[in-house]
Length: 321
Image (cartoon, rainbow, N blue to C red; front, side, top):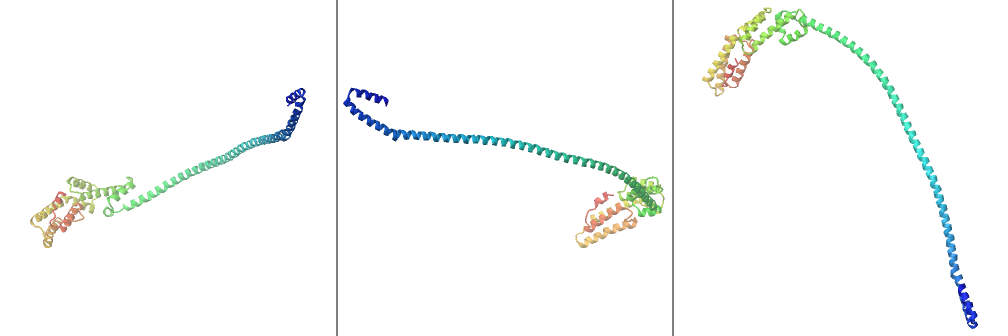
């Protein structure tokens, strides 16, 4: 602007007329400039100043807020550290408390275990003493009971030999032998009974000449009572009775060959013929069902088969003799 004014002054010096016109123009420009200054530049500058001022105030406020936040952050960090420290202390204290509680429980249990061990040891000693006393009493009672049984057995066998045979069996005799042993006065009597019953068993088996001879010889070593003599006689006649039954079976087999029963009448007739042969055997051999158990079993089997069917083949019965 200053350059414009200088230029105008130079021109003014050169021409006065022109100068007048120029002054007018300058005045117009000056007025325009003033108007521009008032209407545009000044308001703009004022606005800029206001904006700068407002911006400065806003920045100052933000800085204050930032400082306040920083202070608050520091305080929070301090509180966090304090809380962390407190938590750590609490954890330590909790662990210590729990450890102390566990230690107290452990000590209490250890004390109880020690007391229980002492009690168990005491009870074990007492139990051992009671067992020893009990065993001693048990042995005494057992010996007493055994002696009572022994006395009863001895009393039982203090009877006539034939009466003992009647009231005993081989099983009861062997049982009592195991109880009384060989140091009592009844032991010889028990041995005699054992010989008798073993000899009697020969009659319950298929006829065997050697067994019969052995049994008869053993019977001569014991008291020759009525029952012993009868058993010896039955053994002596076992072969005769056995052979007689063989002969009777052969006669029945001859009846089977000659006579076939085919109705109720002939069944009955044939059965009577067979029973007649058996009756002849019983009568002529003086056969008693209680004397020869093995032969009796065969006779009863024959009767059973022929009663069911008189034509039944009994040839295999002969093979059993």
